[in-house]
Length: 447
Image (tube, rainbow, N blue to C red; front, side, top):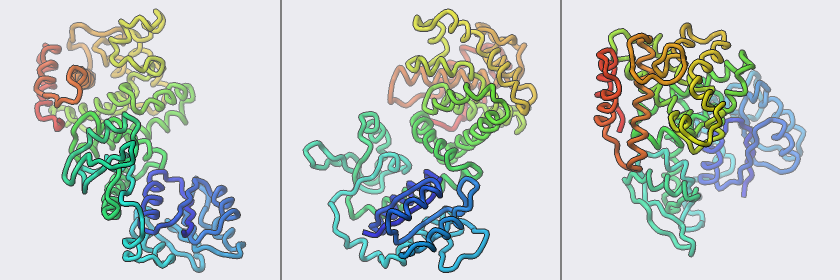
């Protein structure tokens, strides 16, 4: 079996590389994240091919790997992904990291692998596919099987089925891998690869770890809540992009916020993190439809919603079984001091985020008002007109998410009637200014 070494710090692309190279080339693939680890591997093993990103963490990985290869008796073929700063002899260049087919074809030519030889390769009747990959497909491309304890295989979905709920259930039960007929493996891997590459190309500007976190967020939270179209799912990810970038900037510029942000960042699959992204998505929908809304409002709303509950992050980490803020208030688990923090979290979050010098003007005011009280203390019972119009959008968006989740809690797995959600908002917000905002949700594009 041919050995291939890949030096890359892009975790998502690495998943594609190793899957495709094993399926199409029948190769044994080793992946390392740093150039230093790559150099160590060159000493230990004889590789037929070495693939490296041009730059890794600001280091010229292409040049360093090339220099060390020249010292070896058996020199593997070097493939550089990217645009190296200088020319190399006997090196293949793949300019775009998303050019997966070009990379696989180049490796196949070096190894002498043909499509015919791969299809005729002897293997087990069923080929394993990780659930996280299958979840990226809108529908099953072929029959999918579950391996039973007795070693036999049972069909859990056929071509054209939307088996997302079934696959998610297997995930919850600890089953991470399903199977396809070995004859379908190349077709399935190709579809999955195209889906992931399309996603990555729509999130340019983020580094590999950020993209990895966004993929996890997309799969583990957004995908399991709303039945979003590809267009709206992309918009949701764009919101997450902006928030992730802000998080990195804030950590650099406001060390006092670093601990809170690290706690929030560790809860990517939590209600706290997820409802902020979803509420921002809903607020964006509203802001585009009210007569006075615009892009400047959307940018500010995204910032505010991502950080408005940051003071609560440690409490949600400590009490992961609690979801809604009213749960925190009435729970016997919280101390009086912790409950006081919940009641004051809007004010405290506003005071914390204002230490970030580049926070949008007025964002502290919006954070303070996000529960309907101008002083940031407690939760409004009667919603008045003494708060900012943007605060009203944020307030209604959060209420929408909470109403949606509560209905979902009452009937797990059932489709939620959005008209019922909107009706609940009308019952909660009586004033005309709020009702006009709520009316923009009549054409909300989910579920």
